[in-house]
Image (tube, rainbow, N blue to C red):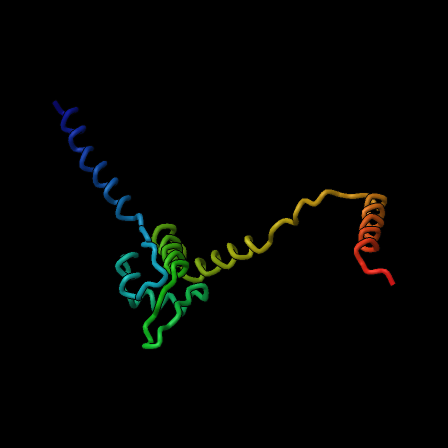
Length: 142
């Protein structure tokens, strides 16, 4: 009998973990702009935290409407989700998360060059001569 009690006790824990994972998923609606209250509800963060993060993370910069309201774009909301992940789940400090995001941008900018095939100078001379012939055919005669 004790075995059954353990199995029954484990089921609520599994269900609780599944519910917790479901809560962690943030589904961003397909909209152009979000007000700070909407972002606050989506990300389950107080609005003052979002305003504070704007001062700490240069990547997070919502535009302001003509009435002065913060209007977050989809990429801003995605950045909030990423910052929340770094700070709350991965345990980064604010300076550490800021540096991590900077390094991520640098990694994307440092792309490898395109793999153009190496051509010999003879091939390039032949190609140039062919282009010169075409240019003579197409250009008006004087």
